[in-house]
Picture 1 (cartoon, rainbow, N blue to C red):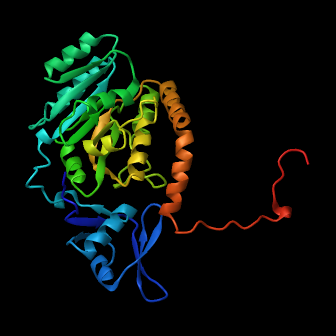
Picture 2: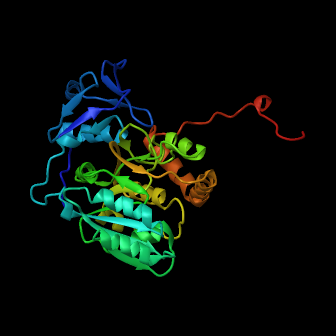
Length: 352
């Protein structure tokens, strides 16, 4: 399946610096982790002072633009991404929205009501992950014209999303949690990003919806762990945006299937695991906070704390190696040599 390949323009990320090295060559500093790029004379002319927007033409500038995008030094301009005339990516019929749910029919109803406001709504598949009251879920789905896939046993988010993916016959799939309310057209800019070369996932900013309530709800509304901020960035281990939640995103269905989709053995952290496997397989992933969806905050501090602990415990055996390897690749070509610490300066722990 083809896509647009290269964005029509990029804008520079905040904090990028253009400096002159000792040899007189122009250097570009920025990104996450921080890195330095040496520019050719042609590249230096195109970069200029490292601010504003630059148009992209195929060739050397195209390759330089992708190096900058992958490093977090530049960001694709969504409105400048070329449309795909032969496949028409961006149409609702190219996308299937998968919503996993277990009970919480009232939240599902709110999510579907928001999606119904879109002037061109994609097909929706509800995956009922063995609800205690499946009739309530089915009733809400029927009221909004959504298909329902019913699981006999509760398998968790990974199994539910994979079950939904199995019923997707469109090139693109959107995953949306039942407690997320999206604005009309939220998926269009993310679909545009997925048209770019090897971009497998495009995720929006997930902001908390609650502005008042209990102290815990107010705290999460101001510092939600799902809200990754205002800066667009690549998603990769060892960078500023190392992961995104699967609460809302658009992805290429073939890319997800190529790496085995979500790992059903993980009850928590299954999304982070999948993103890192995609990155290791050579796919690109993008975080785009210009698109915002809203989620309901978790009701208790205990639920928040329990989920965070479980996420960490589930991913610890995988994440340590992935982060270490990725950090070395993203940083300098050679790992720094450690100098031995003199015995006189070593800390002693416990009785001597």
